[in-house]
Image (cartoon, rainbow, N blue to C red; front, side, top):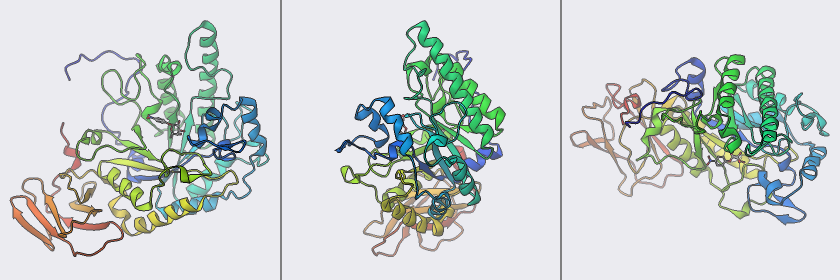
Length: 444
Ligand code: JFZ
């Protein structure tokens, strides 16, 4: 676009993708487990016998529960069935390479024994540092751990939705100090943390304090070199969020794809930067909700298609789990983890370290490609009744192996698949003679 570049104090810190080792690892992970766990897991969407259909982690707000009543749930938090090692083993079997945990959600309750508020795990009957147990157990399985942190805080008296008076501005300054102190504490006390996933930054109060979002980004990277932050943290000088007033992505990756994915035909602009999509299993439940009959529950195959779809466009996919208040993981989620895991154990090589291939999308499924290789992966979800998969290759592509391939026109092929009922997505690997159609070459 032709708009003049404005001078921004708090805008994007660089353009394009980061290429350092920490970011390369984050990108190669591709598939992660999101965990929403807090006091909301205890009522599980039900209050005084009434079921609230809206997101379980919003129950305090949906059922208009006073803060003091909600906060006393802390004295009931005693997850006797919680076993960090079992959670980590399940995630490992599912094929997750990273896990992102809610250290503090909107309710303000902290899963770690923070110095900066009493509203934390050490004052529950459970007492122990859940965050530490999780970090250790997941790291022991070779899984990276990232921290979700909601800036929005329903518990803290100094939180403000907007700044409308001198009093607001003084209180909110205190709040920003509190949040930055907590973030420094997390980065310092859990040194293996890889990335921070910010949320609850959409209010005017934050938009009017873009300086703070940049300060936090810089502080985390100073305390923890290589640390990664999502775009949702950030606001610029004019309160513009995610993308600054000059059209540049702030933070290290775009995190706006929530419960939706970019259109694989039209939205290829996402391949210009790193991004991550996050997804619920029911329609809109992040925290534990007792009643999953209230909306469609996605099947393992639907979710697997989203994993592949996301990889094919150069993104990471974060699949949410909402453990119950007693620390157990519901059967449906265990089943999803097992089914996705079975496929990932056999076919993970078309996901991990793979990227946008740059080939024209076809209706049968998705292409992925290992960075820098001459191997093209076809992941087939929709086998045509003819068994014939259309392939349109970038001009001049030469295939090394022609088995199953029929050339029908210049750079156009049909791949012949056996006609049968397939129960899981099929992977076809084609070797080309050069690194054709590399996603790195995407042009607007
Ligand atoms: C937020 C939270 O409110 C929710 O509880 C959950 O933690 C989720 C991961 O994040 O919800 C959002 C945040 C951003 C958008 C929509 C819902 N958004 O950008 O469209």
